[in-house]
Length: 335
Image 1 (tube, rainbow, N blue to C red):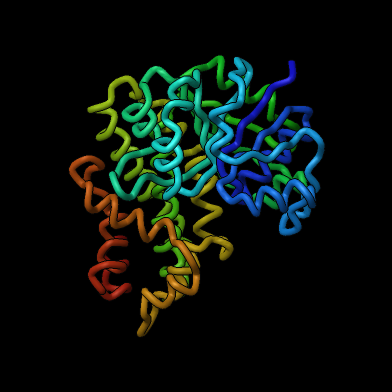
Image 2 (image 1 turned 45 degrees about the vertical axis):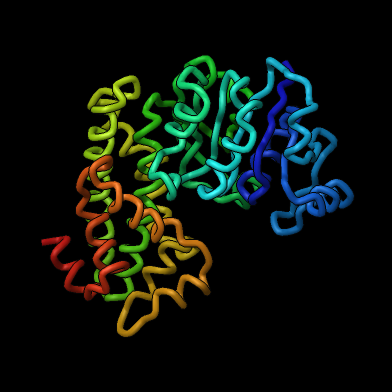
């Protein structure tokens, strides 16, 4: 069966997934807001940064075209925007998304304006009856394009949806680990960025790598605590303790956290590596670009009543927002 995937957003990961899907024979429609970029992609049929050549299965559209495109029961909708763009896409095109049976997303993080996780935006702005699916794990766009072995988590509220996505996307080099723990996977995607900032600070302040491993363990415990706190209010998303244990060992949690905490390609770790001596966070962030963990630290602290207490978040908040001495905070975290 030929499936159609509509991908909303054209960041590198979204383009890599679009290329992957199209190479497997799926029809792919990529939606952008930038008309010039649409024309460029359509004319050149390539994205040089990832060495992608777009095949005939990929078509580029403007978001406004959603109003005229026909409905298709075999269409899968994937949001591949930044965390700051997720809510805007949902809200701007509510009429379309309300008609969808399912929504998938590749976006990691949460909405910093409202403090909502992305499944909550779908439930509150659209409908709790829409089937949801998040794909998350230790993965770089260039690695998917070059067919390096990758394993990611796929969390969904619908087993049929999970199986359909895996059937359409999985290869021997791009594998999926299924779970129903949507909130656990989402929270892991938030916490791994905060942890990576602290991991960078540990490295630059001469702590051995054993401390990063302990940081990851602390983060895993905090993730479980946060998930329990949230699901105490959202009972339809509650999973067993056994499943929660599996989540913190999964690609979405331990796998992604290990990658982000140790590899300097992460902007979050890059920020942490600058936290030594006299430093100016504003200038550092301006040079690096958007640092998701920096924003998430403030959001989780601001909405502590929703997410509960976290030793890792508290440590990051003190360093990033209260100008506390890094070594003093880190020593206290591990003691």
